[in-house]
Image (tube, rainbow, N blue to C red; front, top):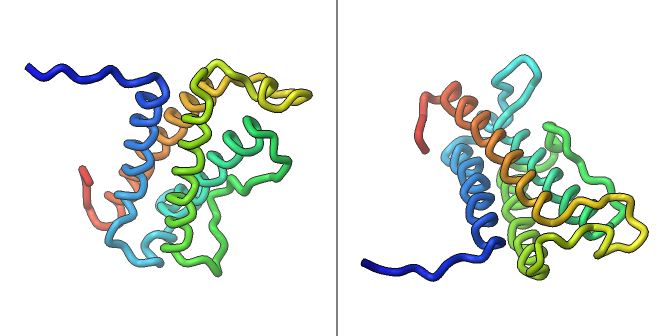
Length: 157
C-alpha cells in the first residue's frame, strides 16, 4: 500500500476548483465559435457565455473582494462579439494560475479580505471565497454539460 502525503487545505480546495474549471473548458472542446456562442436556453446562456461569466466571477472574488482592486469585472454571460472563442477560453485559463497563486500565497485560509485590505467592508475569509468558487464553477459545469449535449449529443467529456 502506498501512503500519500496529506494535501494542504489549499491544495485540496484548489484540486476541486481546478477539476470543475477543466470540466467547463472540456465541454467547449472541438466546437467552432458559432456553436460555442449558440444559446441553449431561453435566457440566452451559451457555453462561451459560461466561460466568460466564470472568468469575471473569479476576478471579482479574488481580485476585487479579496485583494481590494477597485475594478468592476464583467460577470455577464455575453462575451464581446469581437473576441474569438479561443481568446475567451484563454482568458479564463489565464486567471487560474494567478488566482491559485493568491491562495498559495496565504497559507492561513482564514485570512479575510479585511486583513489583506484594511478598511475593506468585505470580511469573507479566503477559505469561503474558494469554497464559493468551487460551488459556483461546479453549478455552471453542470449547465455546460447540458448545453454541450444539446449541441452535438456529447456527454461525459
